[in-house]
Length: 150
Image (cartoon, rainbow, N blue to C red; front, side, top):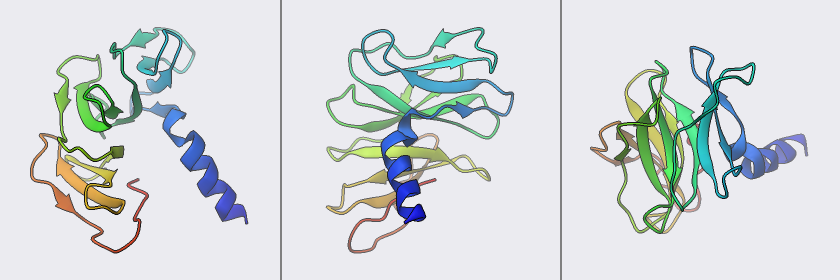
């Protein structure tokens, strides 16, 4: 029962949890300006910076291992796609282009790879791509849902 509760907690609250860069800066999502946007700040609450500014939702930020880039989900094209940007909000690049929902991006700790969940095959699968967006590979390729690109 405990594992089920943890999984439900992660599914419901995971995207909104704060995540810290190696240098200690915290990335988080807030609706303080009307919709979901990505912000950073120091752990003591100082130096609040808004990194995204778009009428559509931006959420689920995740730092790369060096702390100089964030990968995140944006719905600015009408569906959920994966984007990457510099830690100061500049150099925005779209990594995925699919009519399916691409969500839950996570940087690899070992290489410049990004894993994410997508339903582009009809089932929820785990995919991986480089930080430049190519090549794309389906890691799970199983019938039914595969989740947990963490």
